[in-house]
Image (cartoon, rainbow, N blue to C red; front, top):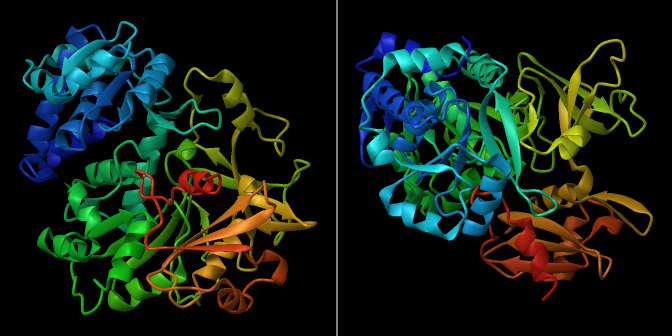
Amino acid sequence: MNSAVCMLDEAAARFGARVALEDEQESLTYEAYRQRALAIGSGLLAMGSARRPVVVYLPKSAGMVCAFMGAMYAGSPYAPVDSHIPMTRLQKIVESLTPGVLITSRELAENLTAIDLLGAQVALIEELSAAPVDEAAVASALAQVVDSDPIYIMYTSGSTGTPKGVTIPHRGIIDYADWVVTTFRFDETTVMANQAPFYFDNSTFDIYGSLHCGGKLVLIPDVLMLFPLRLPEFLREKEITSIFWVPTVMINVANSGALEGIELPQLRTVAFCGEVMPNKQLNLWRQALPHCTYANLYGPTEITDVCCYYIVDRAFDDADPLPIGRACENMRVVLLTEDGKEAAPGEQGELCVIGSGVALGYWNAPEITARAFTQNPLTPDYAERLYHTGDLAYWDADGLLQFCGRKDNQIKLKGNRIELGEIETAAMCVAGVENAAAIFDAEHEQIVLFVETQGTLPLRKFNLELKRYIPQYMLPAKLVPMEKLPHTANDKIDRVTLRKSLET
């Protein structure tokens, strides 16, 4: 299998008449899915875009997934972008990629007049989807692809303000999809409910996991994410068997009371990734739906979404750390100390990853690639690429990885090394707190804790409770109660906005 799109060929051959992909507007069988992707690929090849990056600027939809597959049929990597992306950011992505084609819709095409496409051709998805299929041209383009070629370039934020294009190879996705299906025992009866935006790497679990097993992928309407009380009913109506959501969404569902008296006998797998899952809300899910398998997954965009996992096999107290477990198949994790040595059991080290899922690097950015992707210092006798995640972890007494937070989220205050994530975990144990984010105010040398709560929380009383979980020197100097913490488009806590609020 040299290209991940071969999974679509195989699924269409086995399950051609079975529904593969569904959104609010349409439902596609595997054969219809393949034919539309082939048409898009043929149209791209007719435009002369073979092997050039293809930007996909569309609303989240079944058609957007078909565009991904179409780019692969043309032998090109795709770059998904948010349909609500600011044009200044899209301009930076175009400058980084210099794509051959930008796929968009008639409705969105007018936005592109505001930027310089640097010679990229604009292709309307409505016209590409109706292009005549050229099987010979597609076969020729696919024959030139090798599994180390890029499948997609996914842009993440950069510390300098310039987006970074994480470049993932086909082999990374192929191995990842195989691990997903094998680990969770997915098959053609699997029905996944996709929450993650397609410009967020968590979506690859859904897109390629469902494709590899011949299951069905159902896209959750964006509006439902604003009404967590309605999500369980959606899962029931669509007979969803698997979800892979960011913890914030699961927290919102648990806090809304939607799990009370819930019955979802068809739901079998509940996986989560992207930020720390609080045990308080996880326990509510496990109590409401004890028949499900719960999995805590971990991984940055640079390693094909996930490199570690832990199947939750017991109850955890609110203040207990939830392991991120062990490495996935075809991946290896090492913890490195600051002097490049391997961390001993129980000792914190930077979590570094080796394996088929490791990205090729950052597109058109050799300097930052060289800093993040290095030779493994533990294997000096042969070349072995290693990705530095910037996250801290340690091996516990059970041989499981425990996540400790970001290296850059660790501060030093009055001589004490403090991990802000530990304060957030403690805050979640206080009655009335639904979510929390700790920010270090460097100007005033103090910790500010933002808490999501419906009531009032006096700082002194709050810190008395907090002292049950963390030492005095870690207590926040300022408490900011909020009805709702701000979130990014990926449903993570928007720490940039919180940090900016300290400046006003």
